[in-house]
Length: 81
Image (tube, rainbow, N blue to C red; front, top):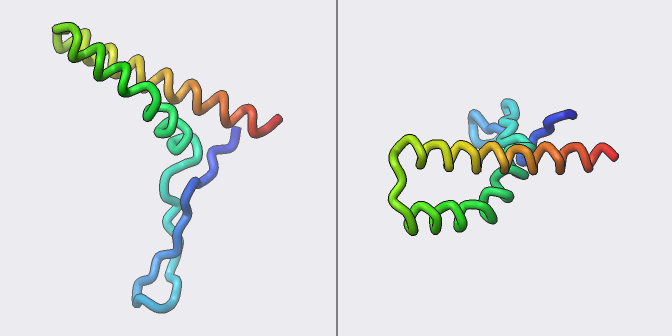
């Protein structure tokens, strides 16, 4: 699975001539961020509904992030098909 740049942009040292490129976020990161937009409202609602320990809160957030990257990996794989 190739992780490409999602938003590469030119860098301008003098404001006129391109002096290089910034790769921006990766496509995998972009897909994960888009998935996170759907997942986070449920996570926030759950955290507001119940009083979790710091450890449980951290676990819920980490699990959510891992799930979003799992979805991103599936999207990356689907692009190769």
